[in-house]
Length: 416
Image (cartoon, rainbow, N blue to C red):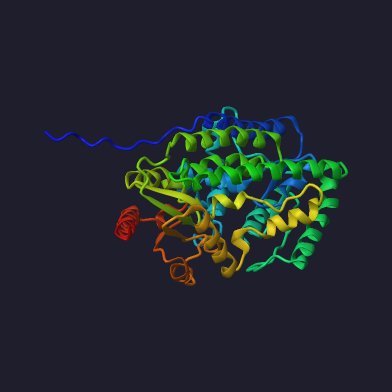
């Protein structure tokens, strides 16, 4: 009788418990502020001016994070049709539709994860930056009308090549123009020294998160894209705080020790892959298992790197925030994006690229205008496009995706 082959297993990251505590504290602080009537709460888009808001005393809540939670818990599908019914198309961002639908139904998956939390925190102000897409503005304006709350923001440039002084000056001016409105809502004047401190903490968080992601340049890699989608939590919701810095100062040595000890995230790593585009939040477990079983490690992604802000500078807070928010991958031209992926190839030495064409997120689907073919010519590596969505699983065929990924890995095997 043949011996049954042992299935590969995931290796626990010991810092994960500390990360869960950071996330819990974030949501409980917001919930306690609602109960106590203070501090004031600002909702902010994921690469909006969170540093400015923290410096002005606001607690900051990120609806895109809630959208990801709705996707990861597979509850998004319960809520998207509710938003569709009030006029928000199934073709637009499924973060928006699932979040608005959940609000209209009066539910949140946070209530199952955290005792005493029954709803998302009511905002005192909504602050967006359209560097992600126009949908975030429409999303926040819906809440502004619904809750009768001020909604202000930054209108960014799009398809930017090199980020020059003119772009930085224009965005910096828009950030500074937010200050009087925010002072009126917060009831306090902006303290520029506090802003410098928060920007400094945000830069430190960014540098540590970048170092965490770059541990995956080691061969074999101690960390995967799927790990990154979980451990990016503090960089997303707590940048600009000491708690986020403390977390990555805990996680980074653990990953460096894995490298020193030769511990790989994917046992017997044979292939290294780059993930472009959004995660399929409702299928993280299945996809990470599939790559694990194929001995393929997804070592890098544009998504997890979206919270790396190397331009932040405490000595020049407004202009450096403007540059950091404008250098974001999603808002750049295809030429700039391709150069970025070329640099990532040099660092991470991946041998194939997976493009996720996310149905409701065209701004973060980079396969639609010939980029896979151009990169294949430049980098001499193959790519595959899978069709799906960040939250709307009606757009995702698991059978088709698995077949495509298995065939892609066979292709990589053939090139060895």
